[in-house]
Amino acid sequence: MTKRNLSIALLALAAATLGVIPPAADALQASPSAHQHASQQQPAAPMDMPGMVVNPAPKDVAKDAHPWCDDTVWSTFNHRVAGWYLALWGFTALIAGLQGPPGTWWRFAPPMVLLGLVQFLFFRNDPEAWPVGPMSFWASMQGEDLQHRVFLLLLLLMTVIELLRAANRLPSFLAKYSMAILAALGGVYLLFHKHGGGDMTAMSHTTNDPAMQQMMTSMNTVLHEHMWFSILGFGVASGRLLGDAGILKGRWASTLWTVFAIALGAYMIRYVE
Image 1 (cartoon, one colour):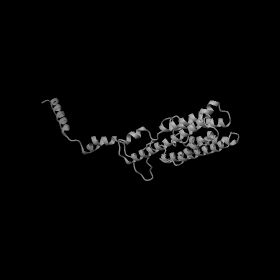
Image 2 (cartoon, one colour; image 1 turned 90 degrees about the horizontal axis):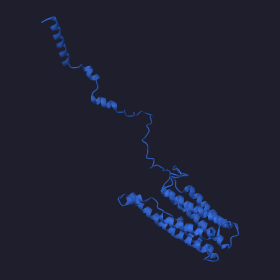
Image 3 (cartoon, one colour; image 1 turned 60 degrees about the horizontal axis):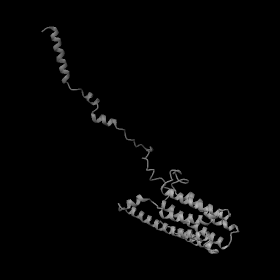
Image 4 (cartoon, one colour; image 1 turned 180 degrees about the horizontal axis):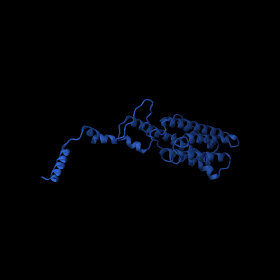
């Protein structure tokens, strides 16, 4: 064997020897395993240290939209205060009607009471909506909030008409029919006004949850209350039509409708949900 062949044989033997020698222990410890590599890729959990405040998970904004107010308490208060305003409206109109032909400042008392009711409901209609709640004006123009706005508009129109009548500036046609029409529209509108919506009614037929059943009982009570609001409202509309159109004569013409207005107010004072 020549020197060249001997060198090649020694190199081949060295290479084979290195291929079968296991790696050193410190090399095994230095190279991470697959499990260790995966664990290093995961974010570390926040450390609990004394005095350290960890931000909680964000709450459900829709659920806590207005936790500062209970809907039932708010609605009950609104209806009862509105009842006092309506009873006072009917009472002041009764006094003005018993005085005979309008000629004193007292004729302005009924429309001013209505104006007070409009201002009260403007701020108190819905706790979650403009102007007192976080929901903007345009965002609240839907559902139950929109229904309340429409009814508030009817009351505002009635107030303007009564003020013009007291000032003897109301055209003849409006003097005869406007209040009767608006009162009738309000009565019809109350028949279709619902608290809660149709989805809740559908859910009640598919669940036996006691809380849901109690809510449905409350909704049925509200429907019953609004039915009587409508009936008494139709009484106000009929009385105004008979009196303003000249079908009734004398003091009956100016006082019959006030009896229904006072009765409506007295009924609303006992409102429950």
